[in-house]
Image 1 (cartoon, one colour):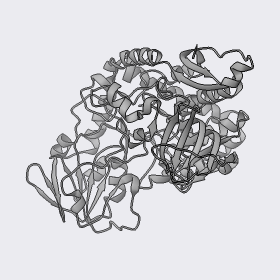
Image 2 (spheres, one colour):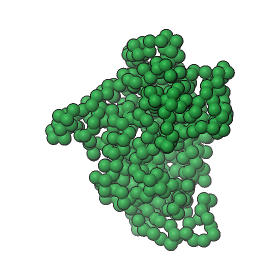
Image 3 (tube, one colour):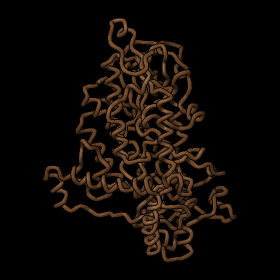
Image 4 (tube, one colour):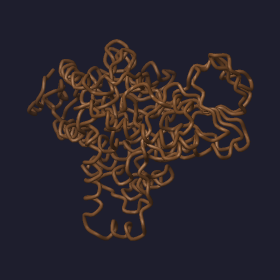
Length: 522
């Protein structure tokens, strides 16, 4: 990283005096799984001029922040890890948050990338400077100028706080599941959990036995499947460590089993009837009370919303001190929650488990591309979309990890992240090697790509299943998930297809007679 005494101007930076600017080739925003994986890949390619900005105080991102009781992953442990850094020591088939965070920290240390990360360092704004073909970043530690910017902030970085009348006037503690307040002891208190998604079904069983009373406020009931949880024996872990290729073979088996879900959810949705039978039998066995069973039975097809797994959630709902409230929340008073049917539920603490802002993330306002338009403004006009979930027309030299339609509804996000990392590193190498000033995906290429993507999506249960999920934007388009086998996503991103981009050569390279890069030159 080189420090230059360059003056930077722009709408987000003070013009009162010149400010020393850090110049880097690549600036990565986010120190979670995506930022760590990209840092490792850049160094392996021999690219050293980069920095990773992380607003938190350490590696981890989602897994650093989500420390609520019962926090765990719903993807098999051996699949939820980097392909270049297997973990033979997973203690069980589905890992808890502390074990995953330990793995992430271990990856960072084993690959010696800490020096490339700047912690407690937050992005305020990123503006494309047309005159220099560089991104100007305003940050909490001063300006940075970068040739390429990569957003590795992920989709789960901004908690979604519901707009509930009176919530801010509640006398007791109120906190989001992703911002768990460990100074609050919920034991013997009347607690409300708002939401019944992936976090809530882990929190509820974890606190139900210690609280005085628990009200679970449910807007939409989830389909819940058995969790095939088992601890790995000492012998199994020894074999994973010592037998060559065993962890790779086991990962491959887990991967292929998960790909079967793509057939059911995307290729042949009628097959979800079989999954529905499994979930219904589980519910019948674990929820004996007919009235409760009626309240927790979903009214949409299996798979339309995220499929969840738990062996403890239904039993927790059946406890005498737990109630499931299905009437909407009308408002919050200083010591209670009032429902739409007029019921007053006295509570001492409120846990908000309502997920994250996916399709309207505040992060979209941070990036300002060509013509001074923010990503949020572009998405508001054209809808949330990207090319291969990784590049956006109008934002040169910018790439996104886990961008639109790159999420998976059935398998490991790390697989998708590694696919995008390979593509992005290829792009960065092309910019360097071919003396390119900027690369920008062509609008017609992105539009054609997304038209085909939404055509495939239209047949999936995510669209036809009869629910309103967080996968959908305000127009009803699924802008979160990938509508195909995950290996086809990886195949698409195997190499950087520069012919799909508008390419601007550096002036000095044209003067020197360097041959133009493929693509549309200007």
